[in-house]
Length: 234
Image (cartoon, rainbow, N blue to C red; front, side, top):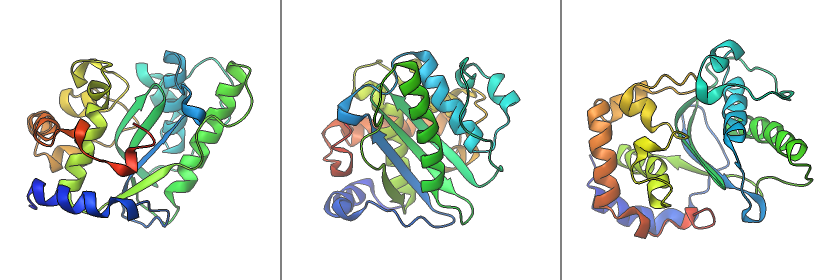
């Protein structure tokens, strides 16, 4: 395994050239975007659920499964999105923050991730504009995408994604923040939209995930790492 110090040096030198839009089968990407004009994206629990429900449908999860899980239960509104075939994509990690989101997604077939994100965000934006009687873009420009190329990179980004609520002082531990995949991987919460086997394998098991996520966050001092690709989000 590449030493984390060496990886950070390489990453910080190379990061300005790492916004990928040419998605490929088998690739895992960190996808993120924030609200237009830095506005809030998620104002209440219904908004978080609306996004996760649409993501579930786009990933091929049935409405029944989504409605049987508390965090993905559909809001009482018209869902402007159709279900997709399963197994086109795998969601490995996520964190929804009040004004932005982070997703770690694998493209399993030739259909590009851009189609998935467009489908989710277009439907969600219509929901938000109708609910809050607003017009215009909900998200800022195009989403960003960073290709994951090494296991240390995957582990570092997974730590960053799950420690975002701690970094932004929303909670003092990732367990307390329910709008991320942390508790699914660490504590066997059964979110139907998440494929968690890969993360459990990458970190050996749930204990390894908890240990390494916190270790990487503190060891690399993530709030101070110059993640240039994340600067316009965080």
